[in-house]
Length: 583
DNA sequence: TGTAGTAGGAGCGCTGACTC
DNA sequence: GAGTCAGCGCTCCTACTACA
Image 1 (cartoon, rainbow, N blue to C red):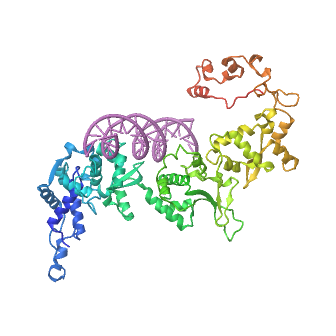
Image 2: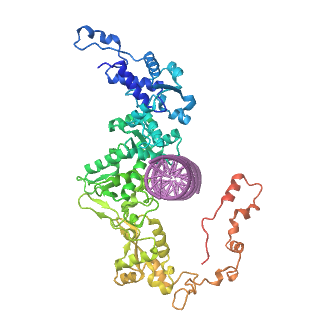
Image 3: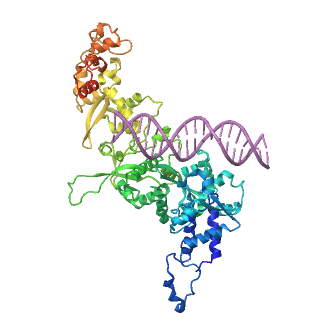
């Protein structure tokens, strides 16, 4: 159907109003004109000669109106619009909001707000009208943007200003940081106002990662586009845009299609981000947050075996398992951290983590070989998924870690407990390093870690094989003795030495144990002390320990003038690999 | 590769001005 | 006085970067 010129002007008036206070530039006007004609099946590049043959013999009515979109038509439209009683012309050189052309959609030919296919403005027109914008009256702007007349109770002034800027960016939308710069409003107030606009239904607010920051993409509700048009919008922004909502929907769909368990690599391929490091890192964060709310867990799954080669090496793969039907809370967690569950994790939240995550989640190595090698996994009968940590840890910050560990190990009885089970029972995977440190202190020299009268509280470390890899195994002193008596284990090197006597340099009491002072510490022989009394300055201690030989300040005066800079540098940077402390 | 530091986005809550 | 709006201090979270 042909487009009547009056109808075209009415449509363009709407576009001018939609541009709000920013106004419509010549480039966008041209694109809007083209879009209107495209919508009425008149292509801008169609030649008159193409339709001449049809005029006489075609059953279709002859086409009327403008057949070709060129500079003259756009300029004519501009002039016609500018004479309209409701339209005003303003100069961007005087009052352009934000003062940056880079964020001004008024002449942004890539903006899809008014066009199906952009119309490229000629340099002549750009020079003539580039600094001018068409704007219209307040009532028409309100009608176009908000869908109703001016109503500052319903839509406060500051919110309307934001809305008009968002409207000016049309279907392309605008990122919240850009909106802050353009509006000049306080950056802390803008998110709240855009939230209100979303609740009132004026705009859509989509959580995305774009411009290398996590932010929101804002669009008028009427410009909410379907998934097929998203790629075009992304192109218009000329940046990587990660849409959490779209990811989440696709994520859930893929999980359900695969019986709620799926290899991580397959998920990456399914989401179309295989080989994209940046997107993969972001996906890891989303998965971590989803695991934190208990919607899914990371598992290591054994790949289906080779039926033709039963001796083929079993391969494991990183996988994800959906634990329940995702809800709105899970969608929020996928998008962002639920407030209070980040660094301020509650004990309950920690206990519900149920995943292998000790802070390495941002790296691709988060599912690494270590996860596969740890013992204590549970193999599922059906799809051979090996689940890690299916028991909630019991540690809370008000429990003394050493006491808790002793209790867990003691409850394991004569059989003892492996390190993986100990993690699972006590602190979970999150505080692995802290627990490792405590265990090393307790067991590296277990016969010295407790004074003799508390030896029954010592923890003896042994080693065992789990999944083909050596792991530590822990028993209490009494339980280890029982295991020895039952011929299940034998006193190994450390145990034999402990039973043979204390380490060299320690004073031995009548019972063979170290002599301890009133505080429970071993008494240090006087021959090991500086001057034999233990009363010395730091410098004297350093001299006695021969630290001056490696001290760069001391050696500075001895530096030979003939040393090369490289040799001097080596001297200054020389450090001992370790200090030998006399026993 | 892991960690610490930094910058920016966003949310919470308080306060003051304004209106009814 | 109550409700609303706007501004702002403080804080947390996230992504990036430099460095060991």
